[in-house]
Image (cartoon, rainbow, N blue to C red):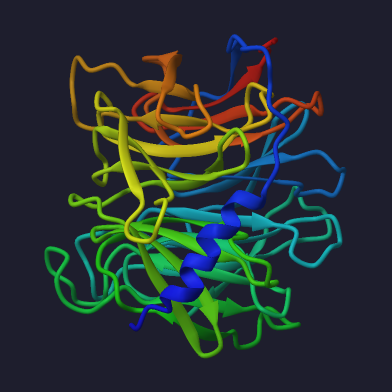
Length: 394
């Protein structure tokens, strides 16, 4: 796909226009961990959204063979669906896309990364009048190896369900057809046909993506991580614009956008897929690939990353979780990395969880309205869903 480089570099220049109030004091991270569920089977995916319209963010968990939401503030567990496919559930998208104050929810299932022909499933869930009861699944067309999904704003300012598979159809060892990234357009009647738009099909073995507002048009862009590196996918009429941002040779697994002191953008990844390295990308001074810096090379099967101003410094920190799947005598947990300069060249590491969270996924959200971002994480080997209540003080 032809790269529109002039436009891309204008986008890079725009990254310096954001403003954040700098902090003159360091903050000491302090978190109080509370178990929400200790019977998690896998905990593949999390979402934070107001499910019942009470203006409180709830937790949505997609587990091996159920989808559940946990009601804020008491965290009562409500089963939305039971087993949708014989194979595992794998991903979830939850957000209020129509402005009624209640989230719309979609689920990915049929998880078998070794079957690049027949695996995968996509469902939209229709809520009952009482959202604590079971939801009605509507099965949608899908590509094989459905792996990640999010609600993403399109050029008309409306939300599409964007689904990113792990592999292209029929791929073997990451070779073959490209991954077909589809945008599903929700009809007025969700039981009727959902039309789709192909956003891109040039990558192989993608792993995660992050919807971002990269430029000034209504459509969100998407940062995509995969075998071939770190990319920016910009929605355009009739397809997507894909621009390579960084040259991580082993590829990247997780990816999120953050902002440094002064407003400059950075991108946080885990490399390679299920890898050992927490990596920060910062923009080049003049064209070319982004600057890549490994800030931690000690992760074991890194599988989750989030960016946000957890410590209320006026700029973002990075939170990473790792799971050490299949390993013995290896600690799992969560770390927080705080930038020490506006260029993102120095980072301070804080251990948040030491060996009680084999992290599959994590999110940041202010769950109790105190103005501080809490950490929400789900673990497979540790079989738990936890909230790490943010009690940090400057």
